[in-house]
Length: 186
Image 1: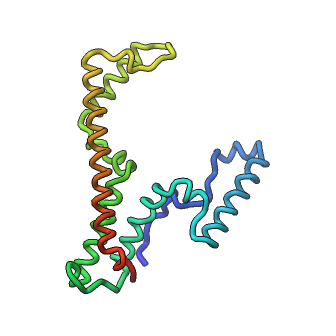
Image 2 (image 1 turned 180 degrees about the horizontal axis):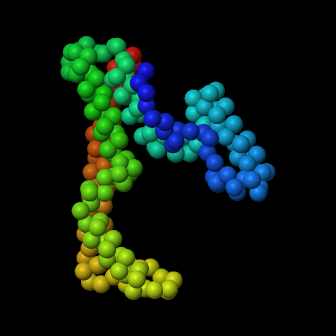
Image 3 (image 1 turned 30 degrees about the horizontal axis):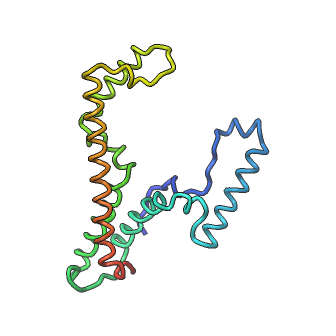
């Protein structure tokens, strides 16, 4: 089994506040402890807990890529038929599917800000608008200059394009996975 870094998104031990908060309010800690124990029990008993099905899409995108890599890195079985005549072809395909699933998440996009080449320009204009706004309780976008509004439009259009590309990548990846769904075992 390969050593993978622990994924905090998969932990049922979720604490809403910092420790000092619980020190002053121990009943809150006990209440959250009970919920965490219930979630741990449900994961052991059913394989999932309410935290997982509240956010099924996020859970799936967190769990599927490491599982595919685990099959690729430690699996022995492979279909043995086209297009996976060799274990190497099978393992490469599994890793490719894992990479593509990860690339279709918002988290991956946030880790790669260079995808939106207009982000820096819009951020600069937004900060300038915030400075002009001062102490007023308003939306800084209302204070953008004309070049700032153009930068914002370019940024938002590019964000929409990136989101559409992510969704297309996900659909294409899932379609390809489904073509070989019954081969995903070891």
